[in-house]
Amino acid sequence: MEFWYLWFIIMLCCIIIPASNARKIRQIRRAKQNRNKRKLGGMTMNELIKSFIGKNVILYGYSSGTEGTITKIEDNWIEVEDKKGKKQLVNIDYVSRIQEYPRKK
Image 1: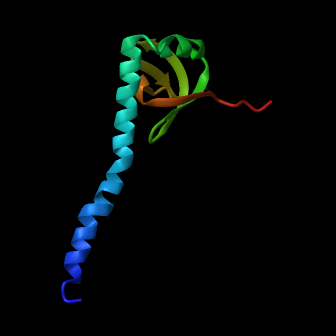
Image 2 (image 1 turned 30 degrees about the vertical axis):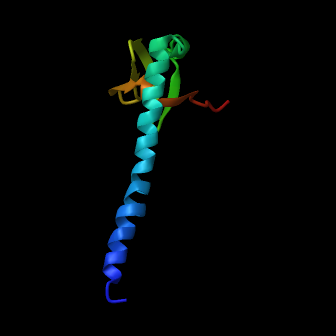
């Protein structure tokens, strides 16, 4: 047990560091696959998202979410305006789900 720190360094390099990067690698692969599908004509996300223009929605990305009203869609970008009037641009490649904001009735 004199060289326990060597085993720790080996475990760190071989297991822990690659496992922490695995999620980012999957996200990048998914985005590349979406881009390739769109280039080949397999995806028509822009046409589907156009039905949400003017509605209050929640956009879910791979790591975060955005809430607001979709104001316009151009090329591969969605412009979202929140309640305070701040505008954001969201890349469609990184959107995994769009949900119309639930209203209390």
